[in-house]
Image (tube, rainbow over all chains, first blue to last red; front, side):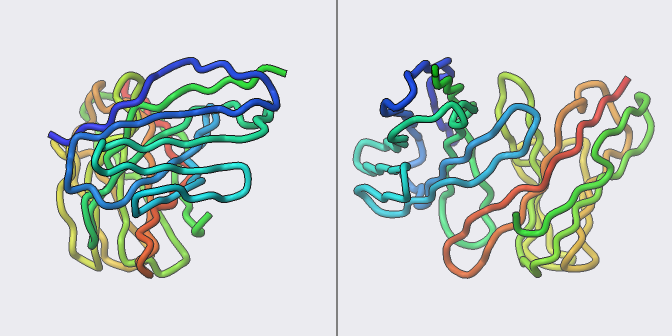
Length: 112
Length: 113
């Protein structure tokens, strides 16, 4: 049974601070890792993908992957009220047609 | 947004009736997926397709069937809707250029009474 675990929150962070979101996964064969942002009543929006150990930066977002610890994280720098959303961690085992296994999401609140 | 549309966007139906949800994409993606999202469960894979007429089951496929007769269209059918199938259904398509990134449609909110 593949599992992806996230703290459901809510995680409350002051505006301008760094928000840190964490995710662990159980399937050691997982090769691809994704972070989606989902606003209430909307569809998931891909914000980051990471495939190898280390950090990957894109604007205010940094994804971190540690396959040995089966751990993925997302850092959001200079948090803005518009970052308030639910963040979904998703993993994929391999190539081809494999679907994603999602965590239940972390609800992030940025306090002005 | 990968040019993905879903129809209908909202539907209310009665227990025991058949329901078909449609997903349409304009980017010629080979891979397409159906997920459902429920409170407390997150997003779960129902069925997926890896080409025209090529489909397979996901984690929660019981009570659902799919068809893909054209690259751009992926249909999800509830043969006889039950209240446990009340959910938000999302279609996704995957970029197959090597990054394997999935992009989601706007979703269909289905209520079975």
